[in-house]
Image 1 (cartoon, one colour):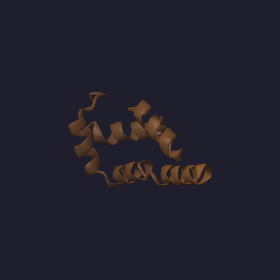
Image 2: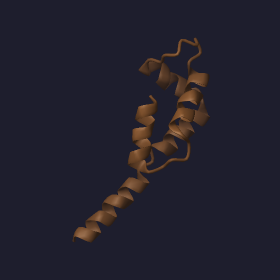
Image 3: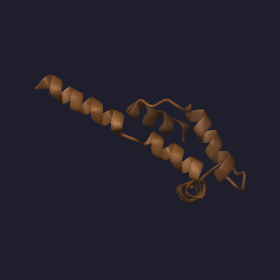
Image 4: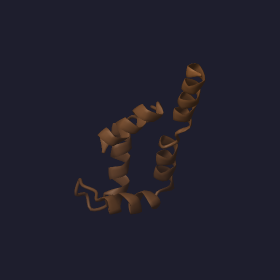
Length: 78
């Protein structure tokens, strides 16, 4: 999971929260059984139950920076 969040941050160039902190928070809040594993279904339902996690993930997935880079890149090549 940490690798996925790191990759997302590399794409969006948004490094506000370290990936290991994101993963720790998700496991603290969502892994209610303390198994150390989450299925996709557990992750989705657990994240939906915690507005702060949803807000963090929503901000993380904001592609505004990526679109700016694409648009600026197009202008340079025109």
